[in-house]
Length: 512
Image (cartoon, rainbow, N blue to C red):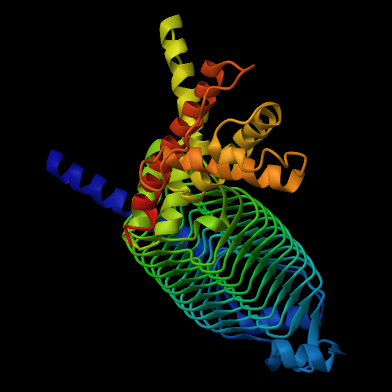
């Protein structure tokens, strides 16, 4: 008895479940002929459907009485590929949570009111090529199972393709987006073409995924743009693009060649924590704002040849094998001990030896200007002394990478000491070397030449290689110890700067 009762209850539950499903499916999938929608459009009636299944093709060319036409300029026809005329639709279109079985053909159409296709599945080809959206255009969370063409379209208000899924190619090339653009978390399984497009407002592509080629070459972003944590699995092309405001590529993954060659970044460009699996091409790019590549990983060559960084470049915790960039094109590198040392080694590896020297010099200057905090007075005094010595090494021979510095300072010191020797010579002759010009000491050119020659002889004698020191005798009226002090001081400085010169030569010229 109990088992039969249980069987009856089970059958009753199955019936209720089946009834609920049938009833729900009847409400969720209302069958709507496409001709019905086209007819309402021809009568300028609002189009509003929820949970519908639209059967047939939404093709404006099938209308028996098409909407009014307007002419287009020949230049627009030639450049954008638009037809000579455009249809005007004044109907408000709002379709949600629905499926369209046939293809959609609204190319060369001007939509005067808002167009909403939220959470709609397009089973076949969608063609909005050359269309113009004067109001909101929303395709939020929709699925395009075939190709979708919005090429050469104009969007004058908010454009929403957030969380859309494109199973095939999506063409938005040479389009104009005059309102805010939302492609966040969109997924492109085919080619995504935005080449030559312009974005007048904020463009949000954060969290999007491009499984095939992503083409943005020649695009212009007049406001901020975000590609935060997006994935580019195919060839990525931003070559020749222009970003007038900040752009964020932080946390992006580039699985194929990433091309940014010839791009222009007028404000900050954020690439922190991005991953470049293959070549990253930034040749001839221009960074006018802060360029941040912190914690980036370049598995392939990082090509920044002829790229110019007019503001701060940050490479903290950046990993790369070869980073092709010219130090002369870097206005300032953000100070990080590891970043500098890695870049110096990189320059040596790729044969940019002068760049390695210049980078090393700047590293030593930045290292000195970022002293470690000292708690005790003794440590502070020691730090001050080291900074003084460090500054002398910078000025005197550029930490070993400026061989012309010792030569320049040598000329300066010879001239300074020649003044002293000239003044002394006016008072009393020093030795036979200077006695030859003493009688004509009022001949100033001769006096100056003899003083410089005498000073140079003393200076070079300090090297013990070029010339013997001139003799010097005691002079009445002057302290012999003072004259000897000047003599020895100039010799010591001559020896010091000759050593610094040879050290710099051995590190720079002779290594070649």
